[in-house]
Each structure stands twice: as C-alpha cells, then as structure tokens.
Amino acid sequence: MTDLKFTPEKRLLIDGQLVAAESGKEFDNINPANEEVLGGVADASAADMQRAIRAARRAFDETDWSTNHAFRAKCLLQLQDALVAETEEIREELIAEVGSPRMVTHLAQLDGPLADGLRWPAEQIASFPWIKDMGVAEMFGMKSHREIRKEAMGVVGAIVPWNYPFEVTINKIAQILATGNTTVLKPAPDTPWNATRLGRLVAEKTDIPAGVFNVVTSSDHLVGEELTLSPLVDLISFTGSTVTGKRIMEKGAATLKRVFLELGGKSAMIVLDDADLQAVVPMGAAVCMHAGQGCAMQTRMLLPRSRYEEGVELIKMGMSFVPYGDPQDPANMMGPLVSQKQRDRVLGYIQKGVDEGATLVMGGGKPAHLPKGWFVEPTLFIDVDNSMTIAREEIFGPVLTVMPYDDDDHAIRIANDSNYGLSGSVFGSHERAMNVAARIRTGSIGVNGGVWYGADMPYGGYKDSGIGRQNGIEGFEQYLETKILAYPAG
Ligand code: NAD
Image (tube, rainbow, N blue to C red; front, side):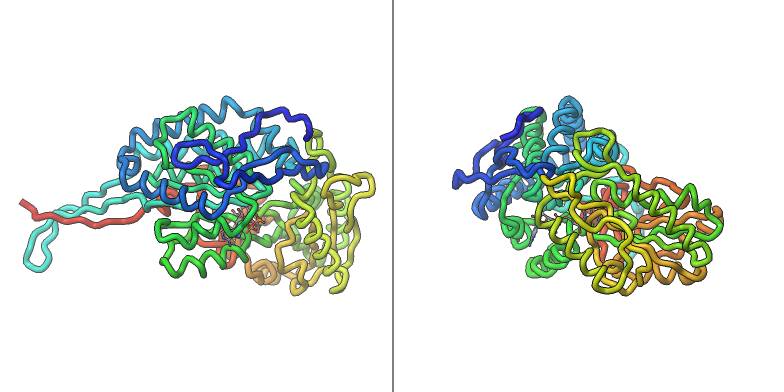
C-alpha cells in the first residue's frame, strides 16, 4: 500500500451506522497512475443494499425530514462546513483514486462543486414556493380554495460514475436532500472513498437523522441494480453511460420508477470561418483534460473547409503541447485513464478509427515514457467522416476527431447528426455564432468560450444524453412531486 496523505473511510453508512459489509468482504481501490493498491473498502452485497434501502424508506416515512425545511437547510450547511474542513484531504484522495490531475481538482473535480453545490440548494429551501395559492374558483357549482403543493418524491437511489465522482455526488446529494428526500448513494467501484468519506462526515459532523443518507460501495454493479428493482425506491438519479441508463429505464419499468438520467455525449466544437483560428483552434486540445474522461468534452471539431489546412496545423500544435503524466504534478492537465478496462476500450476505438480510414496524425498508443499506469497519448484524427465509429460513439479518452464542413448549415447538420445531445461550442462573430448555437440540439452550449456551468444552471442532455437536469431550479423540482389540494371557500 502506498503512503497516503489522507485517511480513507472503508465503511458503509447504513441507518446512521458506519459498518463493514455483512460478509466482512472488502475490495481494492487502485491508483490508476501506478496500478498500485491504495487500500480496501467494504464490498457490499445485495443484502447490505436492501438494509440501506429499508433504512432510507423508514427515514422518509417516519421522520419529519421531508417537511422540516429549516432543519434540512441547517444540516446541509453543517455538511458543507465539514467538507470544507477536509478539502485538502479530499483533493489528495481524488488525485489518488480517480487519477485526476491536481489541476482539475481546482476546477470541476473539487473546488467548483465544493463552493456552491451544497450551499445553493440549501439556500433555495427558504425561498422556494412549497405551497402556491391558486385562489378561489367555482367548479361544478362549488367554490373551492385551491393550492399547488410541492412535496419530496421519497427514496432516491443515487448512482454515480467514476470520472468526476465528487462533483456528480455533491450536486445530486445536495438537491436530493434539500428537497426532503432520503437516499442511498452508490458510487462506482473504481472511486469509492470520496463517497464513504461523505458517509462518515454525515454520520459524525451533521444532525442528518439516521437513514436519511446511506452509502453502499460494492465491486458488483448489480448491487446497484437492487435500487432500480426495489418497490421501496421512488426515483433513480443516475449519472453514467447511456447503456446503463437504458438498462435502468428498462428494469425500473416494473415499478414505474421515476428516472433522472445524465448520460454520455459526443459534442461538437464548431469553428466558423470568421473566427480567430489562431486563438480558438488550439483550445480544442482541452479534449485531453482529465484524459478525456468528461461527458461534456468537445470530441468532434468542425473546421470550415476553406480554412481546413490552417486549422489542422493549429490543432496539431495545440495537441502537441498537452502536458500529461503524473496527476500529482500541478502542471499536468491529463493523467491516466481510470482503469485498464477503460484504457483497452479507448485503444480499441483508436484502432477502429484507423481501420475505418480516418487519418491518425498524432498519438494513438500507450506513452513509452509512462510504463506504469493506464495512460494513453493525446490522440488526433483528421479527415474524419461523421459516419465513422470514432465520430459517433463516446470514446471517453484523449481523442479528438477533426472534420471539414462546407457552410454553416452543413456544420449544424453534422453537429446534430448524433445520437447524443449533451454539450457543444461555437466560435465566430457573436451574432452568427449565437444563431448557430440556437440551432444545435443540445442541453448546453458555449459561445466564444462562455461558461455555462454552475449550481444555478440546469445541466443535462437532449436525445441519448439523458432525461432531466442536474442543478438549477429545474433540477430541484425534479426531486419533487406535485400535489393539488382544495377545500371549501368560506
Ligand atoms: P457506467 O454506466 O458504467 O456506471 C455508472 C454507475 O452505474 C456506476 O456506479 C456503476 O456501478 C453503476 N451501474 C452499472 N451497472 C448498473 C446497473 N445495471 N444498475 C444500476 N447501476 C449500475 O458509467 P461509468 O463508466 O462509471 O461512467 C462513464 C459514463 O458516465 C460516460 O458515459 C459519461 O459520459 C457519463 N457521465 C455523464 C455525465 C453527465 O452529466 N451527463 C457526467 C459524468 C459522466
């Protein structure tokens, strides 16, 4: 085991208790940058998951958590303080278990969501219109006073991926709890400790009642499926791959599960012919940030045919300057892939790109100078056709595909010719770029570098990129049921 600059939590949180798995089993947490075992974590079974689900159900049905707004706000701010107090430990933990570059922990991996992910929904509790007075109306000969009430959905299964685990978890948990739900959090097996730490902080540093928040880690994905199948769970809030999202919908149908799905993407970066190519095109190398393991990555770069050669030279230069290697090094923007499985998957896609006739101009393999760790070189394909597999499927690695287009309409057609619709960007003169952005079928889009991310901004996907929104009031309301109520008007 390597020297750790943090104290990991191995235990599950079930019904207010930090406990080992019933079987006593643990599984290894591995450092993707050197393939060494960092330590262990509880390996829960279906029985552990069922106990957690029952605890969450009981806490929802038998405590005043769902109706005591002021208490909930207080608890969320306690959790915020507890997380802030351990910020640097969390940073080291994320670098170790996710392989996240330190640089990225100062952005969306940690500092971004830590600043307002919990605070913003906690603050909404006081101002949110939980009861809307609809006044008196006469219907069927009777005058009634009417209200629309917003109430917590119930028990939420929160299922999280490994790429930005803290960010996804905090944004989910904050909204789930702020709206009065109870929950079972199921992190990805690759990155369990940030979730078990959250469990310990909830248990030890907050007044959140037993059972309101539970954490179950497991090496077995099907332990997560217990949440989808359980009649005691009202909603699944899932972030992960589109394949798993579809399976959750299918398996959840039997219990008419509400589903909120944040899935994959294949976003386009459109460079218009009046853009400042020198300034803009090298930014396409941002696809390598965190080794491309981001759902909103701009993995398809569309260049105007009239300036294609110039653009290709600029993106080659941008990609050649990507600093990568040890995630501990603050200068690196790219570390390893999270697992050997992911690296093999990415290398498989690269091979497919070559086989299908795209031109590989940079990278494409394992970096020779990094023999340990699951690294892939920054990889650039040009002359890509949008029908090729590398342009259609989410690779989730440091791979950029570049393709030419003829005019704005053509660029829009290519961008929209995708099963996904999660994100995107447009660069060019303001009005023209705004018009193009308005025609892209996607849940988020940046124009000339505008940043849409924030706790108050509802993020999510069109098409196969998901259903529902994370963050913002739209995200908040997603965790609420609507009840209409009427009584005789006096
Ligand atoms: P994944 O779908 O393999 O796993 C995600 C989570 O689901 C893990 O916790 C896993 O254990 C669990 N899981 C797997 N099978 C399950 C099942 N049958 N029932 C219930 N739970 C199950 O995804 P991943 O590889 O961990 O994450 C990468 C994917 O996540 C990418 O596709 C990426 O685009 C997506 N993602 C999307 C967003 C977004 O906001 N849209 C954000 C981050 C990641």
